[in-house]
Structure formats: structure tokens, C-alpha cells
Image (tube, rainbow, N blue to C red; front, side, top):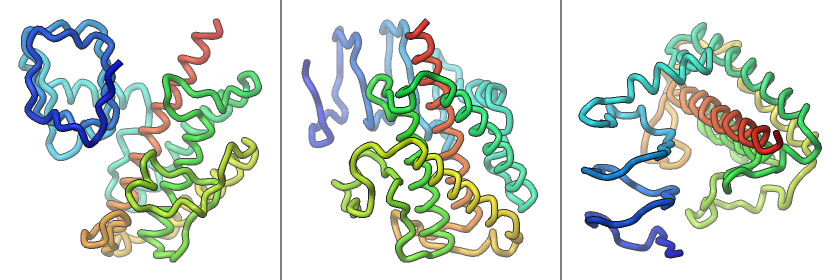
Length: 251
């Protein structure tokens, strides 16, 4: 099976009468891709950035993004508040995401031993997802908002390819830590966000910060919190999806 990486130049390529059945695109830039007169049976699209920047996704000439957004908000109560602007709205948004994760963690804990470390289709396991959220909190709250020099908990997990992008990963734990330690680290970071939101003011939300990935770009404290909430809901969706798949396999 041919594999094309980030150094392969396929921009502007044309596929005519090509058989792409079963092809998988991960971390690819498919902006502006046009599919005409092609079979699309059982196609799955998944992108956390679908709703950013006035994007559209046309299916037979219909922009389906408003329908997708509404359905996700229906499936995950509280998700719609993730872009709240004021302190009370952000506090309510965090309460909702905390509740959603508490229920999902309890669901995972009730499954057979080892389930939390089981990967589905090459994605992160449940435990790895929680570890990534620890790191995401450290990046956007610890580093960006609070401006802590070394904000990272060792149990955190950065995105795939972080080392190749120049990030120092030496602070992070190697191997698979016990799930109890993952839960402890995660609980600490959840409490850190809750405590920050508990006292934040409208003026503090409007204060500017450096983007933790691109220091030349500015963010507001509010936009950093929006990133944290987006991370929480997107990874919660992935976690629920994979737990569904694990349970279906076992039945």
C-alpha cells in the first residue's frame, strides 16, 4: 500500500477514474478539494476545524455545516456554550464540559481492565486523550494565560509530531503511566481551569497574551479559554466515539 507523507507534493493533483477505495487521509490539507461524479458511499469526514473562519462544506450544492453543528450540539448538551464571551457564560460552559467528562470517565472506568489503554483505528486511547488534555490546559492556561515558564505536568501528552516541530518533549513521561496517575493529573488541571474561571473578570478576559505556538501573534485571555473549551469538546467527542466502537466490538 502506497503511503504519502508531508513531503510529497500532491497539491493540485487530478484523480480521474481512480480507485481510492479505503484510502485514509490523516493530518492532510484537503482545502479546496473538489469531488465530482464520484462514488462516496460510506465516506467519513472528521475535522475539528470545520466550523472555523466562515468555512463551508458543500454536498450537492448544500452547505451542510449548520446541520452538523446543530446535531453535535444536540448530542452533546453544553457544547453550544463553548464560545461564551462573558465570565458567567464561560463558567457555565466549563461546568457543562466538566459534567460531560465526569460521566464519560465513569463509563470508561466501568469497562474491563485495560480498556482505557486500548486504541481504536490508530487513534489515541482514552487515557492518552486525558493526558493530551492535561497538556492542552498547560499550554493555553499555564503557558499562555498565566505565563508560567515551565507549565507542563510530566504526564501530559503533546500532539503527534510535536518533537519534529521543535517542541522539547523531554519533560514528559515515557511509556504508559498508571490510569490512576492520569486521573489525578487530569483532575488537577480541571480544577485549575475551574479556579481561574471562578474569579476572572470581563477586563481580564479582554487582556492580550502571546499565542503559545506563535509568539508573534496575539490572543486574548478569552480566546485562549475558547481554545481550551474547543479541545475539551472535540476530544470528548472522539472519546465517546471510540468507547462506542470498543463496546460494539465486545458485544
